[in-house]
Length: 243
Image (cartoon, rainbow, N blue to C red; front, top):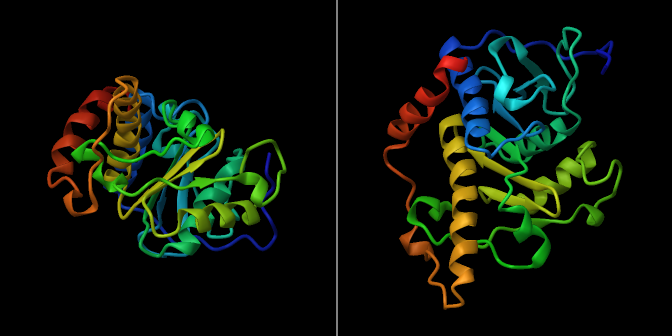
């Protein structure tokens, strides 16, 4: 169990229950669609203080509830763990928020079809319009360029900062042999990107199996979907009975 430090940061205050509901739904939606497994996680920046973020206690995404959500500063120091375990890899979230003021939601997953692209040098790019946020090749973070601590896990601020640097101003980065990090300006768009990054990887792997030239989505064709809320309504309906 991670102890609460004597100099624990102050809370940024209560959160709108509707946002908390979306947070819980995001975790369960991504678990329902196989993007998150027992160890992936979602976070949101605190709406009242950009120097705080919210993430579940160390728990499988498909089981996350409102009572599991904990608050951290951007150094990933907990405000109050309430006797719970924190995710070892919370530094992914804290360092991305530190580096990217435009980001208000982060997903770290082990999205299965994306991992082969992280170890083969095969470029991961969008072939579907709905994944056109990936119209530029997705960068790959190599943990050995920073330092190893516990296998391939991101367990320090130094590693998290290195990952955030590889991410740069992009919406997604791969983590070699591990997974990926997806970012967005809000939680609903983060879910869309995390889900369709996996779908696009599946489609691209299938397209490559045909052995024919591939036409990727060009930057001037890229467009964010205009009806994310419609998709969100459907996705949330699939997990609402579990919340």
